[in-house]
Length: 222
Image (cartoon, rainbow, N blue to C red; front, side, top):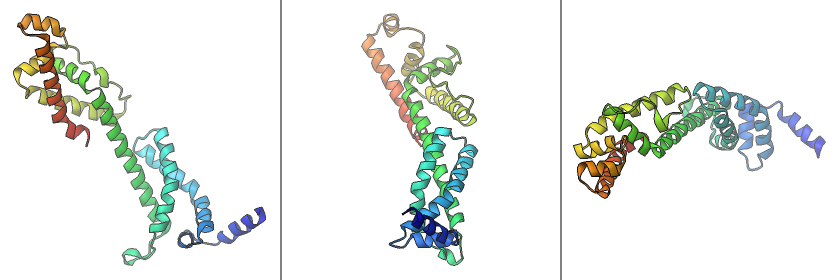
């Protein structure tokens, strides 16, 4: 079996990428697809790696995208038509465009995941930011600190800060006061000071946070 594999691979060495892609589309095209994958794999991994570095993706993301790239190759072969659009297009150029799309999709997924992580810590952050916006508390990043020097994450964090400040200012006064107060005092102490029950202040706090989350949800989950 091994000599036959070498002979088959040697036969394919004279084929262009375009010819191998067309051959791989045939019902018995698995040998052609294997030869094409073996030829292009080093170039594909290098291409995905460069694109991931360009978009600031981690090594772990790059590794996952390389694995997805191999699965993508079969789909690209099935879609390849050298004469589509009225002009000849090379398979490697077609594949390069699809790899770019794959990495861009990975970048958007990373951004969505980061925003979901932000939403997980949003309750504590909103309480903290409410105090900062009202002139209390420190400007420490709080639960969402961890951009790790990443300029994109820092920019998103700053944009979130500004949006929280604006939306906090739009809250009814009693809800805003509760969010500011709980960052400095316990609900029980505030309840005694205001002559209200802790349950009432807890409901105001929950309503204020829910209002802020709803107003920020579209931006954070986009």
